[in-house]
Length: 532
View 1 (cartoon, one colour):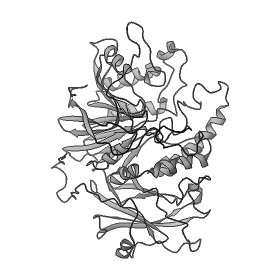
View 2: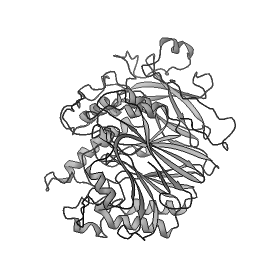
View 3: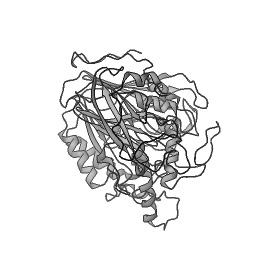
View 4: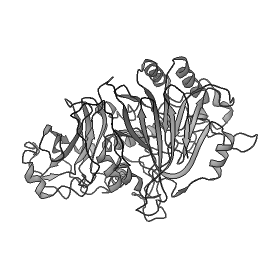
């Protein structure tokens, strides 16, 4: 598929054909000869002899700004070493990095040296500044004479810059034992400005799948060492590495990066009801630390024990305001009795984040205002007939908080309000209404629930729950239960979300197809057209 870029962008921008530019097996010895200047300065810890290949987890970039981006890598000769240290010795190591305007690194524009610290699992987070807005760059790292794979990234357009088009993908839920990450292979070939990952990057559970991809460690993870091993296993996957190296990512955790269905300072509801929250806070601190070490995040998101700044806002010219949410840390515990879901004291986002979100939406001058959201916000009656049944982990369990959000969007006159969501292992496109029980109620926006990369196994075009959802929830316009990812094409007059699906994940090599295209028109809230 050929995608047309905005003609309003600067004329000297680099046009990059999608080809196999990623050297995922590592750089050759010839590459080192081409860049003699890419070397770390004298290491204060003395000479370092690597115990093996250092860049087994690839490279990544993230959180693009108009003048810079985060570059990431992690040194790990043995990514699943049981102590969680990735096969590295207990010492810090200098890592050199460089960025160039060309894939051959002839026009190098920035370079430097960062310290890969043992207490940070030898991860490297470089916040590069001074770059040109809306430009493609290539980057790589070097340590102890070894050169990393090459990554491709892109800075954001200048704030307020007039754009004709912008394209991003979003994805979530990649259980390693449940299936192969084939969808990421296809995502790496898309022409994307950015990728948004909405959580469940790893799964904390133990056990083995049915396709020969068992979790390491074999049991559920609780300690920092075990979380590090789990990330090492996931990030060693070549398809995931390819998608990271192809475009910058914006990431936010959901529940499985810590524990299934956790809420605030509490474990999942089926744990001991009197469990000390401090026990869970210690677990969350370990989980957050490992998440930070393995994601291309800025220092502003570095965890402080069990706390981490997840919610943040990124702008892309005059086209997109992206509000990244944290729907786990500040919520109340899930209800055991659904009668309380309209309790006005219950929080999903917490008072501070909710006020931050509504203030930013009200002040936005972007064409499209998007929430990067972990659990779906539309109402979903799970029961056929007159009876009703709602999930308590989604916004349905926090109905009053959802009402405040949607009313805030409407009273502030927020135009082109969109929500992209993960978690549910199925795809739905839905209108967002002030009152889901009233067909005549105003529509405030549209939500695109995206399926999983692999969680849930092969999936199917539909299932029993999907049929109930479409019958009982008229605001739902599309449903599918296959695996894949979504691509959003934003334009000045309309936007289009393509649901990309693979037919199977129990073995590699699945083809990709566009299952549906959902259209939203500028200035008209809700879904305008479904091409199913």
